[in-house]
Length: 95
Image 1 (cartoon, rainbow, N blue to C red):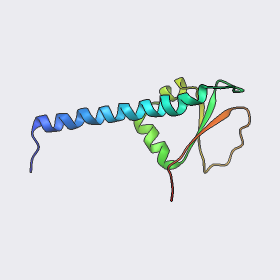
Image 2: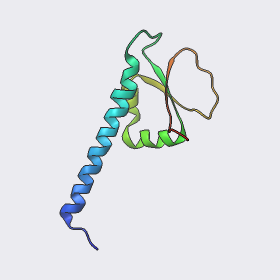
Image 3: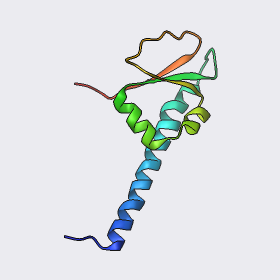
């Protein structure tokens, strides 16, 4: 079964639209929400698991993440202690 050109271009457009929605939700709803309230610093550390790193890297560029106020991106499985910045944790839900 073959797809017509209009069907394939429609899927490409939907893919970009989905990526944009994902990007906006990650940057504005999740990372942007941490800007509210009293904080010790305007910069924050983003701590993610491996699955969430894949989603974030597909949806956002590092420049976008930096503009959202993230100074450092860390893997949760690497043990480092950071006490000078606020942190934002984003994980894949596990059962």
